[in-house]
Length: 304
Image (cartoon, rainbow, N blue to C red; front, side):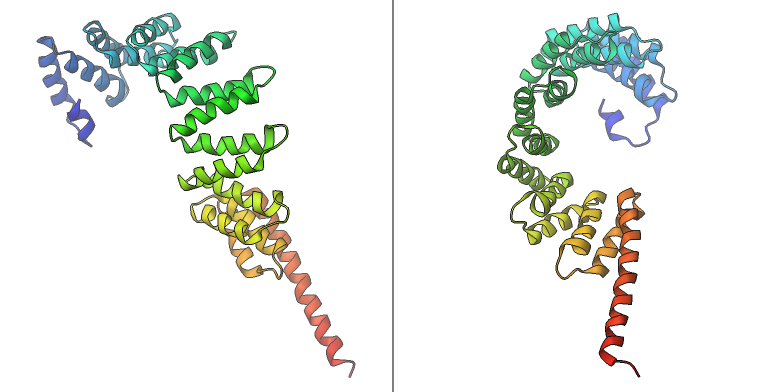
């Protein structure tokens, strides 16, 4: 496998000969490597050949091969073979592999008609207990979006577990949950999680902190809002660029119109629709201000 992972332009025919020679001598790692070669490196992939080699590796106890067989059978075959995918995932799950438990959850949630949410949750919970963060995120999503009625407490529990495992997206989502979905809202908890996500580099959390300080805090703290909007904007967040433009244009006293225009333009150049509207509004406002200033000067000078 190192040859496949380390080489940017591997000689696939040479690698194939080498691995087939090792596989013929019973090397399970070489059998797995051939499965990877045929499923991921050959263009177009040869899934039948990949499955043959993965099966040989799986029969020799290679759990990664079992997981990859589950994925190919359930999601890459046309048509998919969910029964085979389930069997391979179950073998890997019996060996303790969280990825396989996650795959089984997805079969029940996303690939089975009708959806089997109870079974999906059971497998996701097993995967989460094995440390799989993606399973924690799926559980949070299920309890918020798919299970009726939504369960904010269960959603919070799973996002917290993912957040404590270091997942910045979960930290951000926890902030959103506390601000927008808990009854009553808890903006102190929202601030805590957004700040943790921001420290981890999550620009959406930086933008959310800007919104918190500019719109949802009484009294507003526009300096703090500007700080967070600027951090998010500098990280490439177009929502933050637009929000920073709005702050400088409509909320600061006095406004900083030139800087506001630059941020609107950056957001608009990135395709942000609201920024395009705000840029038109800025131009109308700037024209009005110029006309007003000209009128003031005429009033000061008086009639000739």
